[in-house]
Length: 475
Ligand code: URA
Image (cartoon, rainbow, N blue to C red; front, top):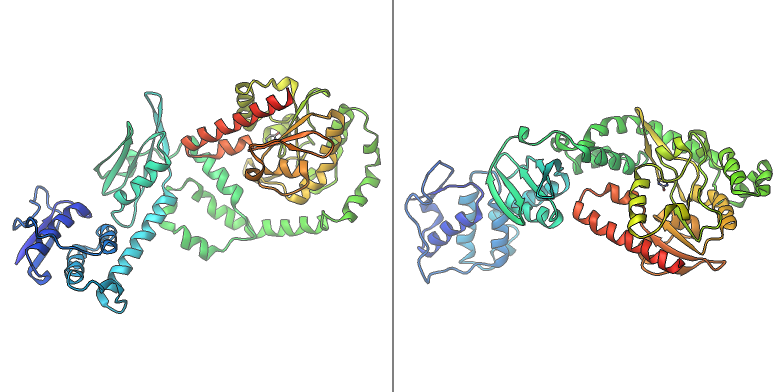
């Protein structure tokens, strides 16, 4: 009986080298005993080495599967895998024999690993741990079901190339630093900070995409099993979001009823009676006061005030955002919160003077979901954007800009009245009815929500390039 002692459980190269030696030596599976672990143990109890020139050819698919399945925690895996390759070396069609018990086991184990890899890709959350040599450093703690770190690390390397990071698991750690990926020993959860600034962004993002009307609890649990929750910043919001889902759906229903299909002409013609005075606004100041009194849709009910655009009446360029955010709602001015800061910096880089631009939004009231003391942004519906176009059209008529920059999809809808993707409109100037030009770009808050710093930097560059294009077109 040969005894093989594998030094590192789950190490494909080590298992493959041993298996090759055994295969080449003609050692049958029943004559091998595989053991895992053991500090300082030699690779082979019985020094099995590959016999030169006696390499056995195996189907590529089988080797690919074996590379994944060796990560499985079942201690029988090295032996079972060897049995499969022993047979496959004699039967090239083995993998196609779906009723074969060993093939069935192999496929099942492979599926478990691929599922685990998928979960790790989705649920690793990096926390910022500092900065060194001008590069930000992040760390993540993760507990995969199997020993899959080497299978997943290249994915994170590709996605987070621009920052230094470490992923620590109980079995091993992967470290991406100085453009090099290395592996080290396993660690513990307390090596990685519990929370950081990125956390709030994840929670905000999750809250924003959570749709109470679509929630299917069983499907959600299957996709995001509870065992991962403790490392997910957004998971602490799942219970309150679920608890409040029914009430939110109810509120959505009520709102829908009071809106009475906002796209219909009936709605459009009903409101102007009450707001006939709006037709008389003669200055931008009067318009701002009228915006504040607007009751054209239910969004006014919860917002602090209506926020009209600001800037010189003779501005050549008009920038249109989506809607006021939390800070804009409180201060009554567009783009004075975090997205405004991102915008200000990009404008400066693009050589545009904010004081010479007219800044406004497609929707004039802040739409949000209260969460404790916070108010979480909610996207306006197409109906809300279309109703609010009343005001945007008036602002356009006053300012008559030569060029309009739409920031994000809601702004694009507000200006054009059509649903088009930013991607399809970006990179070229379009002519609007009335002769003004249109440049479509992303919303600055999109950059704030991107956890991948490298991608965010690229997107920001493209955003500034769009603003430069706008400046040149309006010159
Ligand atoms: N986002 C917007 O679209 N507009 C603002 O005014 C602020 C944030």
